[in-house]
Image (cartoon, rainbow, N blue to C red; front, side, top):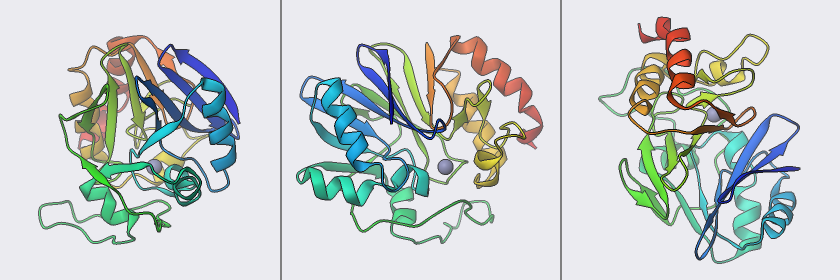
Length: 232
Ligand SMILES: [Zn+2]
């Protein structure tokens, strides 16, 4: 697993060059954001040691298999750890793919293997979790969340955005890496969520797939223009 230090508080962990998770440094240890594919647990623990901390919390952007793949393994190895996700995607984590009455009647897509580990806490839009502002970014999945580090302007986007070549909105990834598109539940909702992110003073985009990208709001505006057709 490749470890890339992004800021003083943020490190990116990459497997197979494509699947990212992140460690965020807090005063009382590390928050791991997403857990990668199955089999990533030991590498994640080794990377966390190198970054200089103990993982005290596992925060999940959403419940797709490439983000929760090593959750059970890590929860077992870490023992006492908070496991945190939105209430909505916790249902997908429990393999319940039913839709709520007000939601678009589109099937939830992508890999949804579920996990045995149960969340200990649910995050809600607007909440401050450690140093991370929780931003509801539904669309890729119904309960997708992004996390904004208010200390340094890093936005950890999960699959709300992807950055394989440039930053792109979920559902608008390039043809040579179509997985974020194929796995996106409802593209107009994903577009509306990405638009809402433009209210934040973003410095960099730390996505679930691809390198961390700088360029702040201009980068996001370019992605929104490129994805405008998804709004319909
Ligand atoms: Zn996903």
